[in-house]
Amino acid sequence: PPAAMVGSGGGGGGGRRKRRRRISKNKEQVEQQRMTHIAVERNRRKQMNDYLAVIRSLMPPSYSQRGDQASIVGGAINYVKELEQLLQSLEAHKRSKQDLDSISSSHGNPTRTNSTANRDDEQLRIFGDFFNFPQYSSSNQAISSSNCNNIVSSNDIEVTMVDGHASVKILAEKQNKQL
Image 1 (cartoon, rainbow, N blue to C red):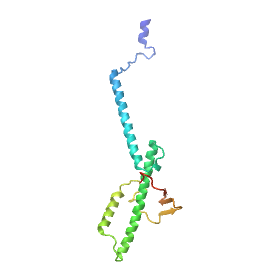
Image 2: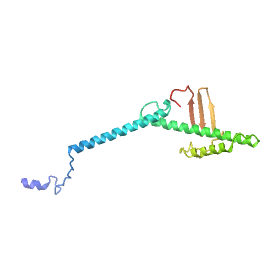
Image 3: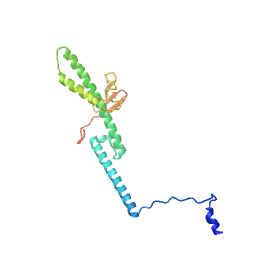
Image 4: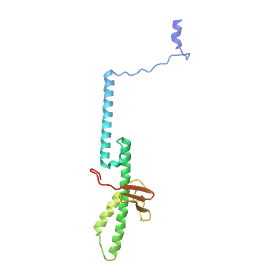
């Protein structure tokens, strides 16, 4: 009877399954692989923390209230978007000033040279394709006085509306290491 049980496999399925043999690594190899993995992961975390520290140092403290990674990255995104909006408003201001200058120069009062105008136009072309957010790109829209409204409700608060996007600025004294 004991010989009959060996062939049955105990499961009624008609035969034994072959087990895969595990390739066994010696303990030194396993430990070395584990230590290498730990070192690589430690270096990755250190590099990430260094990058986050650089990003945090480049933006005002009000954009990253907490020190966690998500708030630093989110604050950096908001800061870049606000800088893009500032660039757009400065470009619009520059275009309106150029329009006024061209009107005054056509009446015999030249105020700009052609080399200055060419350099300014070249800079606009360089930065025009730099930002790829459509709501902020200069090639996608021309900001005119009809869709750009400045509302100043107090001496300390400024709200700028550009095509349905609002930028609220609270003016305060400049702090050290702040743009």
